[in-house]
Amino acid sequence: MYDWFDEYCMAKPGVTRDFKEEWGWYRYFVCGKFFAAAGRGENGALCFLTLRCEPDFNDFLRQNYQAVAPGYYSNKALWNTVWFRLEDIPERDRNPQAPPVFPEDAVVREMTDRSWRIMAEKLPKKLRATLEKT
Image (tube, rainbow, N blue to C red; front, top):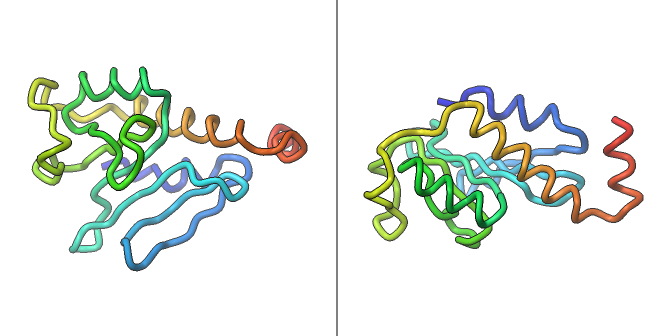
């Protein structure tokens, strides 16, 4: 699921990635600012994506996709996690009223674009200008 995610993130201007071994997370940064995570499960396969979006958009996603829940180990208002298996969603974060569906690739791409943009806009003006040139 979402096997294009890593390549999509890495193609964005200014992006670097590391792997946080103790968490089992690939972390993506735009010029040093964290904007996305891809978490691995016990079997080593990716099991969730965490992205930052605007609070209203986050709420919309949570109401329309059961697989989208408040950010795992992050600010619940600002971050969402897209789970690859509904049963992996922590009980406290589940929304049983939302349709039991997963967001389409286009929705996850939009979430990724928004997350990258939000964090890029927090960069100093000179650094932002270098991103626009690439």
